[in-house]
Image (cartoon, rainbow, N blue to C red; front, side):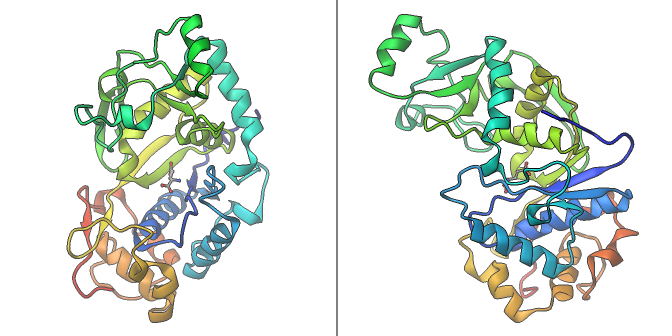
Length: 320
Ligand code: GLU
């Protein structure tokens, strides 16, 4: 794999999963990622996280590009624009992930897991802060004979062993964060039983090979970061910095989702201009005092993470 942080230069990225039309929360994250990179004179890459090709048909990726461009969030490389670090679609990267996965296998850290979802989600199972089950290590020490026996009935997924060790990092928005992978997460998936690589592996491999120096994304992924830092270390790759932005909530406190039709860009584009949407989002995130229409460019000089709230942002009633 050709890796390559460009020395000194900031490289940010948007890494959306095109499983539906973008909603306001995705847009807010994209805007913050773009502003953070641009306010440091950096570049921004668009990577399409369509690992699960069935859930993420190309039509959504194309619409997503059109929506971002309509808003004025122009990227320097990636998506259908291409560039020197392609492929930019995760659905085209299986060979690259395989190469890195083999390095982890060669370290003796990967093992097959036969646990079903139902077993893992048993009522008593403790959960991570992002809603996953803390893996209790059920398949960690199976013998070769046990594995061979289980394989006859079921194709396994694959997990990586984690150490009983604190991993600490300074988040650019949320401040210091520490996780103990064994206690807070457990051995995690690298590959599903159908062969699709897991987000945690793909995101690390791609950010490294695209020379990304700064990851900005929603705070729902804050707890993934320790897992990713662990993979950077195992693979000998240079880790970027991280800034996790607060999520955008509907006025009633609900989390926005791609199913929230009224907050999808498809509908918003009929009601508002691009500058109105950018201005309202900038206002909700503390980047301007009024929800006045503005372009992304006009926000660059005043951007600072210190202005961005640390708590989830509830959309003011009537703003959209
Ligand atoms: N593809 C992920 C999402 O849309 C984001 C991954 C990341 O930014 O690391 O939720």
